[in-house]
Image (cartoon, rainbow, N blue to C red; front, side, top):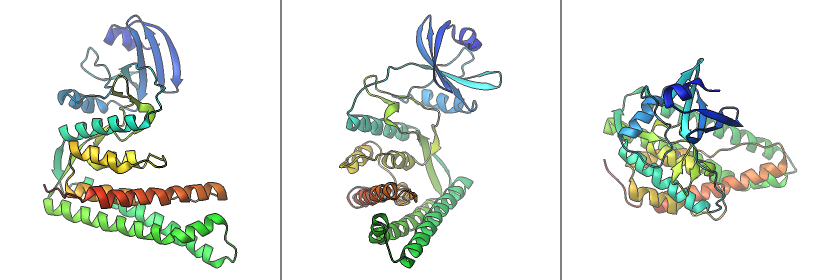
Length: 308
């Protein structure tokens, strides 16, 4: 099926199983592997950097006979990866803890500085401001409609009761965006690092201590990965602050990185569901989520300020 396997890896394909439209598990004369189609070959530089830095725990593609990690065949691009058996482990806390350790170590070992006047900063600020503006307009529009109505459904009552929380969270987000901007410009540089940006429990193979699905790894602000994890966790009674503490013990963040983290966390993922039950469920989630963000802010992030 894949001509490059024998030519570039000395692997003879015996059979294959389609897992998704872009992923196949192949049985070969050397064991089982994963062949995954990716968008282009730009990841070659990322994977080479990870190998050079001896970054552990991530399932980096096998290198081919041309010293490349991404193969081109018929205008398509493919990675060949070691195959790891799926796990039936319910210990989500162990998976989060391992993942936090892995990204903290990757961040710490891969920092580079860019100029604060770089387009990256401008585009980041514009994106954050636009997100705040869109959510603010959505909740203002909704409150105006609710206040005009005589009858309020349970989800509308819940929205009314928590409107101040939603509004104050966006105000906090704007404040942290401004703090982030001012501190980066004062520093005249911004440090970025390799970030995973693709958290899922399915991607954490605990027994083999591996994190799979590395195709979204790219340079970004370190705290974006923390946001990606925290915003993905919809688990009741989960003490998120303990995982942030674990991260900071390995890789402490600079103050502007903490500002960025709080900014993106306070930009809550608001959505208006047409079904009242689904809408109420979502609003309850947002309330609990923002309470956890506030807890991170008060107990962890600025408990011991870092300086560059």
